[in-house]
Image 1 (cartoon, rainbow, N blue to C red):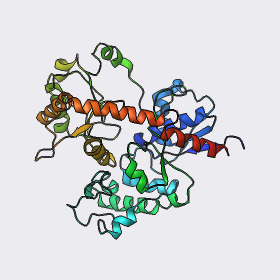
Image 2 (image 1 turned 180 degrees about the vertical axis):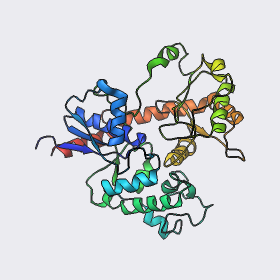
Image 3 (image 1 turned 30 degrees about the vertical axis):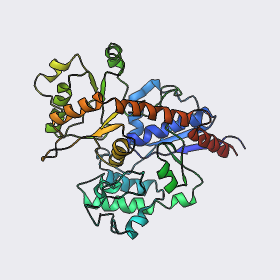
Image 4 (image 1 turned 60 degrees about the vertical axis):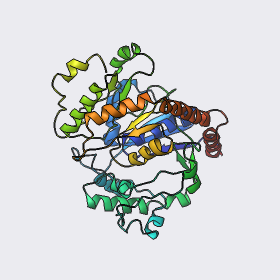
Length: 374
């Protein structure tokens, strides 16, 4: 049997599209032809971002399907988006939600029974606060959407029982207990964005190379990189506190600011901020300052800060704001303590070994390739 044609369907969010595109790139290098299906909305964003730079090499074919929403509707309303996706592109999954109900941690709608109880599945997995359950951390002001999302996840969990492979963009060394608890899920990452076929990364925005000349002038390991993904939205107070906190750190920083990162209007920087810091401006062996916004980011924070100990959490004040003083203090603490850097480099080496020849993730990926070719 020759190499089969693989259809890849990511959830229509940046954090899902990129790792599945990276998986597709790795599969394409093994000779597989890929049909990569984005929603029509995201398909256009990818094409607009890369335009003529896209080189599919005949192996990765970009396809679009409707997401069920009308033109102009907000794709960041994930409750509604997920509902319409379920109607347009139904799927199924599997997980441990039944156990949460049986243990009395959540009710039939996914609402925590005890708001103050912390859930920890094993001594070496992160403790989870009930309000950080995935379905509660997406549309946190919309109880109807939360109920729908919970039922969606619960109803789609059965696919793991019947599917042949469930691949995860992680490694056995990073989350051993998690993979022990869900043995059907097989780690074959972390996938790297390097060595792409052509320029196709799956990003919704074009690359901005204008910072590279400035970066090349900075000492190695000296720049603070600040980015909040494709979804995070701040109110104006929080946006300005972040700007002032970075300025107070008195360190070079590179801050990625989306045009829509603040609510309802163009971001307003503190007075003369850009003039004052204009000459200033993880992944890959660097420590983290964690600022979770929604969904699984809260669990990521627990792993980074509590399990791997390669980062720090921010504390909010009585208004729910992370102040400029808190930002300055945590930046100084993170960069002053060499233990964070040391552990981050160790973690980089660990995950690097897992995807190298003969590593745990490399072996799983090769077994998957053999299975696909059989």
